[in-house]
Amino acid sequence: MGRPSRTSAARIAERGQAFRAPDASNIAEVAPPEPSAPPVVALPSRAAAITIERLILHHLDNRTGEMLLVEAELALDATIHALFASYIAQALENADWQARFLADQPVSPAMPDLCTRLLGEPSAFVAISQEMARRLFAQMRQRPNQINPGDFVLAIYTAPGLPA
View (cartoon, rainbow, N blue to C red):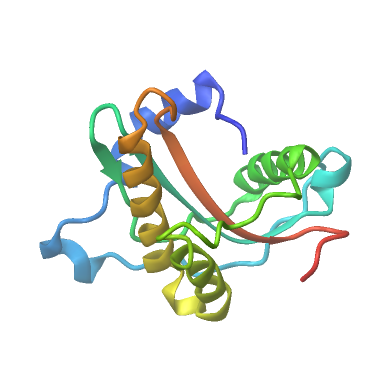
């Protein structure tokens, strides 16, 4: 979906604690934010028509071995919605619609199954996103010089011209 700018990456680094999973002793006190309706903001062309329903961000650094998995969805205010809607719009413009899951790969059935569960089991969104992040991190660690560290963002959204 593109990389955050150095400025946004610096802000994420400064607020690193916000992305760390709570320790077990505080787990009862941490509750995910209540989902709210996506805000309406002025966005460029295609991004304006994108509605993000759910979004989560995990940080994966295969060079240091650090994987920060969050325990709750990101609260979508107008600024965050606009930022990620523009990333999604750009990704849609650059998408390779010929991409497919490889049936002959031993782990491939797991990813399509996780995608199906992601859409069919709303209460498992966080857990499924964490499993997907773990699988991506395992691949990243096998190819440290081919895949750069970064954020894994998983979003459920609607956009015109795409199947619901």
